[in-house]
Each structure stands twice: as C-alpha cells, then as structure tokens.
Image 1 (cartoon, rainbow, N blue to C red):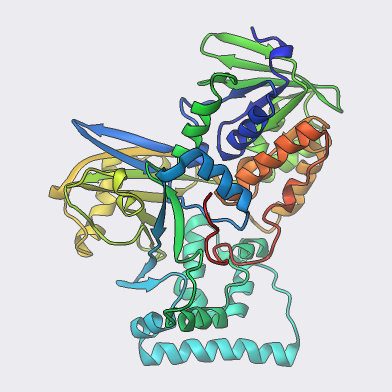
Image 2: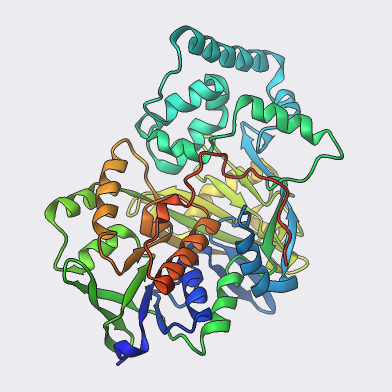
Length: 483
C-alpha cells in the first residue's frame, strides 16, 4: 500500500492535462502518483498501434495537430521530442455533394465549386444579413444557428457549418448554445476573402492554418515520452480507477483506488483530476448536494465509434483529414494518418481512420466493425477511394464522453458544478473532461502546467481563463520556433 508521504499529489487520468501536470511536478521533485484506467497514457490523444505481420500501422484517436501561441508549450514538447517533432503542411477539406472545398474557405475554390448562380445567392444572403444589422441594430443570437446565419448568411451556413455541427452533436443547431460559436469566432465572410487574397502573395507568412507540428510516431508519442522520462520517480497505476474520494467539505482527505492487485488508499495533499467531471461527483464521500447531482444528470456527452482500416494502396487522398457534412453520409470525418507522418503506415500501404458520432448505447455505438465497414464501402467505392479488395483488415474502437454537449441549458448546469468542485481547496479539475469544455490539446496541456504551478506555489488557479479568447481556433501568426 502506498503511504501518503510517498504521494503528496494524486493525478487521476493520464491524458494531456494529467501528464503535463505530472511532468511539471516531476521537475520540482514533488512526490506524485498517476492513476489511469487504460493500459496506455495519452487519453484522447493517445496513439493506437496495430501489427499485421511485419507491418505496423498507427493511428491517433482522431486527427491531432499541435499549434499554440504559447512559446512555453513549444519548448515543453520540443524538449521531449527533439528531431522527432516534424513540420507538416496542412491540407484539410470539406467533401460536400461530391466536391472538395478548402478549409478554411478559399473563395477561388468555393466559387468554382458553387457556380455563378449559387455564388450570387450566397453573396445576396450575406448582404441581406448585413442590411438587417443596419435596420434592426446589433442582434444578439439566441443559439448557434442564429449566430451562424447572421454571421455568414443562410446559404454559406447551410453549406457546411450547420449540417456538420448537427452531425457531431445529434441535435438541431437551434438547440445548441451560441457558446459553440467560440470555436469559429474570428472566422467571418471577409476573413475568408482576406485569407484567399493573402495566399496569392508568395511573400505572405505561413500561418497555423497552413502548417502544424506533429510527433513522428503519432500524437501519443508526447505522452509516452513523458512517461519514459518520469516513470522511475513517479509510479503509474494502470488499469486502475478511483472508487471513493473522501472529503471534509473543504478538502479531499483520501482517495481509494481499485487496482488489478487490490485496493490502495492514499491520503494526498492535493488531487488533480481529468476524469469527466460528471463521473467525479458520484465518487465524492459524502455525496454532493442533490441539486449538484441533478445538474450533472442534465449534462450530456456525445460519444464516438471509430473504424480503422488498413489498405493495400500507397495513398488514398493527399489530405490529413476530410470533413463530410452531408447528412446522408453516416460518418463525419476521415483521416489518412500517413499524410501526418510517413511513419504511421508501411511504405507500400496506408490506412483510413473513420469517425462516427453517436450517443452511447445507440445503433452505431453497438455496431461491429463489419457493419460499419458495410456502411462505408458504397461511399468509398463511389468516390473511387478504395474497394473491398483493397482492404487488409478492419478494427473498431469505442470512446465514450468525447464531446461535452453545449445545449441551451448546459451553462447553468456546469457553472454550478464547477463552483462546487472548485470549492475544495486541494482539488484541481482540469482538461476537456474535467472542465466540460471542448478545448484543444494545447489547452489541456496548459491546464496541467497551471495545476502543477498552483500546487508548487500554493496559489489558486483560474483554469477557465485558458481558451477564453473569442477568436478563430486555428488562426494565428507563423508557427513559433522550436528550441
């Protein structure tokens, strides 16, 4: 049994946030133990590996790429990966009604695909929304649909944003909070035109939209490198989960962990958790007040099922990933991992990672690999991507609670929950699951670093300040230099 003196801090979850916190605490020689329910670190950013004879195929759980405006994060990862951190020229597109559209929008490409008539309709829709702003004044949108239509016009909004968003969340955009627009704020009709104009100049700098950094052997490499560096000093308890988190209403006093070898009880000074905040609440003893549990019950998560297929072709398309917003297409996004790094597949083969958005327990969630493959193949064959004869093997992976659902009522529920959880002076709830916030990998890393800083310096931390800027999530200056 671990004694409390051997673990001043318990970290629940070895995803990006938890691993970043562990790394920073390790640098300060702070006694820590990490609890992880899986057998691998990285959480939603881990890399899966599949061996077929002498061939090795790797895939992330969805497309991951690194960009940030925080130089410390570049130094943090650069120190771990060195030359194994490569620069990738990004190519990402929407596939809509049989045509490929650049993402972010480039008007030369969009006009060619839309044609003159549709393009005029799009422009008139946009001008109509601007005219209504003049006549009625600034209108406050009540939901994501209103925001998108008022910002881009109905035609452009329906081209990809509304239908793809509804595919992700399984809800009409009129039932989604305008907070979801934080992901695209700063992206506008005129910003898209500016983006097109800038790309015409050979002297214009590359932006984070154009390029990103990527670990040579997959996103999970970052977290495997952290594990390798700190594991001699910081124990990892894999296939383990917390069952009880006891407290005195002000502080966490002990944590009981179920491991493959039995139960372990630890009395830490601090607890860092990146497990879903709604799953954290039932572990607390005494239980939270009934109204807090009611708030948690009202929150929803969207889950995913992934189909990974290995393919006897050198390449299927040049993109890292392609979005598929059309409602009749049952999957939402497809990634060819070899286009991130050549090390993700053998030289004479490739792979596809296919994402299905679903509710846990629904028809897609319960489907097997062959059922999903049968759903995909008619589309792949029609688009001339591949045939069944090209497929070597197929694999299925299920992931629950991937996306926190921003419905119209979510903010009141999560604000109440976070106020309660953050009231414990030695409990840090971080990361996408821990904050019920749809953030990026770099934001989770920042939260982990902030948590470690708060622990070492005995200071309060405002985790929600991370990703609080209202700007387009993939914009920025040229990539910062790796050191």
